[in-house]
Length: 208
Ligand SMILES: [Zn+2]
Image 1 (cartoon, rainbow, N blue to C red):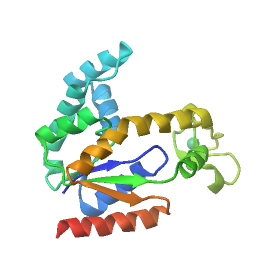
Image 2: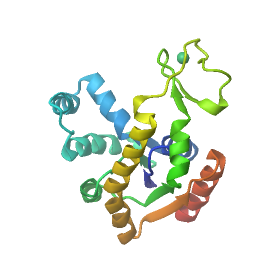
Image 3: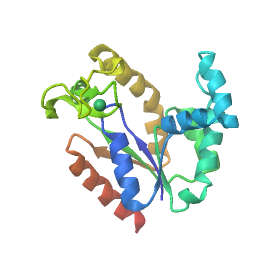
Image 4: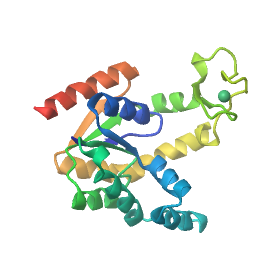
């Protein structure tokens, strides 16, 4: 089963993708992580991507697609995969369809106020990198002893702008998957457990 997970910042897409991938033995591919790993490993595509980034440009779709295809054709993806963070634009969605068969695009949805509230609650430890949720913490210290902070990206105004950019870019992607009959919307204004259960039911339907 080949899936695309779509959803705005704060919707819980990354954690859900990791969980569903492990339950269904699918390869979880976060394109952000993949890009960072290729750059860190100094692969040919990684060096190419780095050059674009260093010049202040976006990494072109063709470079990302080449990295993705190499992963999707590997043994670890033989049972299927979840793409997390890709496609972000209509052009990427179209490019992807030229090379692989996507079975469903799962769109995780929640009201903007809920997303902003979740983002406002995010903290990160500057020492060890661990993520935290403010209202679940006892005080402001990470297990490692350092004081947690709010990432610049998660500050209210930036978060609102990120949501707007996300909506503008992905609206055509959602339309595209709707038109191709692959879009499945999931109400993600729920606990992690609740959302995971909904997605499991959808995948069981799809598997039949
Ligand atoms: Zn820490």
